[in-house]
Amino acid sequence: MNTRKHTTWKTLEKGIRFYDHTERRHGVKPDRYFALRYVVEGKRIETGLGWASEGWTLNKVRQTLAELRLAQTTGTGPVTLEEKRQQAKVQREIEQAKPTIAGLWAIYQQNKGRYSNKATDTSNFTYFQALHDRLPETLRTHEVTAIAKRMEEDGKAPQTVRNALELLRRLVNFGAKQELCPRPTGLRFDMPKIDNQRTECLTPEQAKVLFEALDADPDQNLAALMRLALATGMRRGALFGLQWSDIDFRQGIITLRGETAKKGKTEFLPMTEAARNILQKVTPMGSEFVFPGKNGGKRVEIRRFLNRIREAAGLPADFRPLHGLRHTYASWLASSGKVDLFTLQKLMTHESPLMTQRYSHLADEAVKRAASVIDECFDAAANAEAPRPQGAKVVPFIQKEKK
Image (cartoon, rainbow, N blue to C red; front, side, top):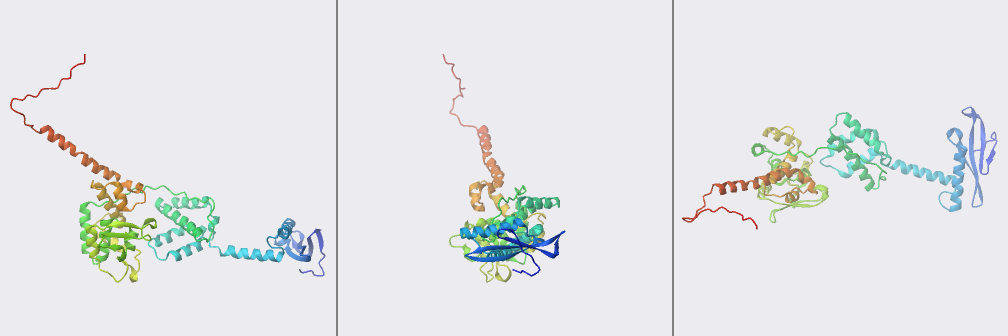
């Protein structure tokens, strides 16, 4: 502790000392320097704290001294100011090492590597620029809600707002699971309601033109990917992640591995004759993947190819090729009258039957068509001429009254 000759130390109370500087000012008063005097294991220790102009007040000094005395009494925590300062330094370093939202996003991307929705996630992350320097555990519901509100006011579609909020929730959950940050207490994500019951279904005529466009395209492996989407109803991620080891031609089974299936659950699809013919015509590219991407790795997108085929087939501009072919697969099966919704749920690998309910109206139409067959039976019965024995008469039935 610096005790220059020009200082005059005074005792405020037991353990607390100070002196007023003759030249330094704190407002209109001389700047005051505080120090502590206390005993540790029989040894008297004097330690300077700091100036009033640096934020030290009498109450703060009292609290510091009380904490040191409590630590000596209980045997927990730092018992000297130097230990206390070292502990505070370590705590600051721990706090500084905690990832911010921007840091968490960087770790998340590194952990995920290449994945199909990375471009969309990167775009959605820009909406949270105001939160980049924030620690995840400090986020509050009203802040997230305000960002969603601004997105809506800027004309963003409800689905875009939902995707952005879902990304932030994913990041927070990722950080908590990896023990990078505590889970924010009470944080909620109020998702906008969306009508996602859109079912895109090609007519047989549109499908025929699509097949012709696929036959004419030079990239027949990607053409096979689209054909397989319609023949199996497989999701985009499952198609991109499909490996040759997942295909069992002998047993007639296509395995959807956990990492490519929805919710990470391994599923099995029956290999139909159409699917078998498509897969047998795919040319192996020296990769473990059936439809590999760059350098034989997992494919992440085929946007240009899909746009080219959609234009060549004259399909509507808002038709989403891979999503649309999956919906077409489900719609065709549901409307056939030969596939019940429970079976359709299994084929679509829907986790919940609620997902399959969007096709229930098509199944209802099939049931109505089946039920209407009785109309034809009635007509046939009404117009039929039943043979009668010669001389037989039709006697009307008369119910006798009870006496």
